[in-house]
Each structure stands twice: as structure tokens, then as C-alpha cells.
Length: 366
Image (tube, rainbow, N blue to C red; front, side, top):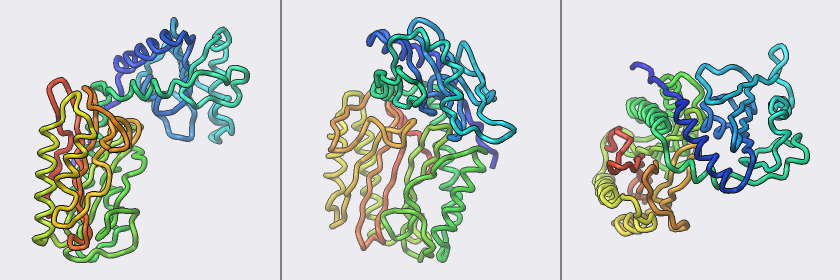
């Protein structure tokens, strides 16, 4: 199978996000924003690097954007000035990446009186370390996904679905969860050809979920595979449930049909202004107690630069769906008779044209 073409965030998209951050700076009468969270550096400039490094971005309210990076990236950076800091000496990393990156920005920082930041401020900043926390504002900006972000999320979803195809083909009686985990990880890496971050939460067979064990799957058990890929900071999050041996029982088929009906009912309700609590209540009404089985977790959540973000389809929050949301819905049913349960998780984008399902891989048990 051909590798996926991984898109990068676009310069125009990053410039648009910078402009929205400048509006925040204007409202708060801040001179500059110092951005140090590696994900936010990418979000605002398109520069991506591994966690070994600490690039920094300075976005001026009435000026330009300056970035301090450890090396020249392969993609165009949305910045007016680009400095390369000394991240290594003869291939050995320097200890204090923060200071090295910050030294390039000090001249531009020296005239700033009021500073905002995203919570990752170097100790070496000195007296300016007291600055306004911009994280809540950035979290709000991040919720509405731009087209370049959506393209990257679509690619992450596609890579995750490649892993489901490989897992489905490999899932036979006797395979261990660790062996299945290796198949999944290999398929993801082959699909994108770069670092993929953590690859999900649940890899167990005959269990609601958990890390892989050296336990062999038996015919008739269900493998609940809750997988994700972190692609340049952006998270997919899908779940499929497969029967080992591909011969589902009558209770398993009944549970699957009820989950599928629940998904259809939920999709019909998703629109701007819909309270997420109402979606959760609908899922709980249709699932919890069905034939004595349980639905005992959240219904879903937003995805983006965090694996869980707004909107949260969870009774502990009171979020409302908005245009630009990218989120999951993951109804499930669990009980001993089901060996041990199942969950189906889809990814969605709520657009001006309506609800779009981003995930295409079949949700069937076998």
C-alpha cells in the first residue's frame, strides 16, 4: 500500500492564527506573546521538531513574528525573522535548550513591558518571568480547526485506519496482545514515515481496555482496540472491536447493533448549539442497562493538539457544539457475556455544511 502524503500546516493558516492571537494581545493590552509549548510553536508557525528541542516564538502585538529554532526545517516557516540557536555542539545536545533559544530573542524582548505566554516560560527569562497566562485564550482559539489543521487530522485518521486493517488481518486465535501491538505500530509507521507519538490506550483482548500483555487471544473473545496517532502534535482517536476468530455470538451481534443504532441517533442530533450533555444522555438512555450490560464512560471529546479537548461529551462539563469542532463519539457496551465488551469510536468535523464523519474504516465485528 502506498504511503500517505502527510500535509504540513500552511503559512497562510499559521498567519491567520497569529492574527487571531494578536487580537487577544490587543484586548489584554499586552505587547508580546512568548510561545514555548512545542505544539503551539507548530500551530502558529508550521515549524515542527522532536521533544529534544525547545523552539520559541515571539509574536508582537504591533510588529512581526520572530522564531528561534534548533535547525532549519524542511517546510516554510510563518515568521518574519528566523534565528537558529545552538542546540548542539559537534552532535551533542546542549543542556539548556531554553536559554539557547531565548538568547536569540532577547533583543526583541528588551523593549516589551507587558508579556503574555503559554505557560512554558524559561527560568532564565529573569524579571519578565511574571507574565499573563495565555493558555486559556489559546485553548479557545484551538477549538475551531482551520482547513490545514483538518487536513492533518484527516491524515492521522487515515494512518490509524491503516493500522486497523493490519490488526484485523493479523487477529487470529493464539496471537498475543504484544504481537498485535507490534503489528499496529508497524502499520502506522509505514503509513506516515515519521515519528507518530503514542498510539492509543487500549490493546487488550477480552478486557474493556489497557496496555498490551503477553496474553494470547482465544476464539470468541473481543479485542477492543482504541488507537490514535500523534502526527506533528495532532491526535486522531478511533476505536474498533473485533471478534477473535471472526464468529461473533448472538449477544455480541445484539450489542453491536444497539451501538450502531445509537451512533446513528447521535449523528442525527449533532448541530451547532447542541448541548453535549444531551448527547451523552441520549447515549446512556439507549445503552446503559440494555440486556443488563453497562455503558460506563464518557461519550466523546474534542481532538486536536491534545487527545482530549473541547467539546467534551461528558456529564461533568457543560459544553455546546460549535462550527469548527473536531470530536469523537465512542459509545460502548460491556458485560461478561460479551467477552468482555465492545466500543466503536468515530471522528467527526462539524462544518458549515453539516456533520462530516472523518473515519471510514468499517465498524463490523468480523
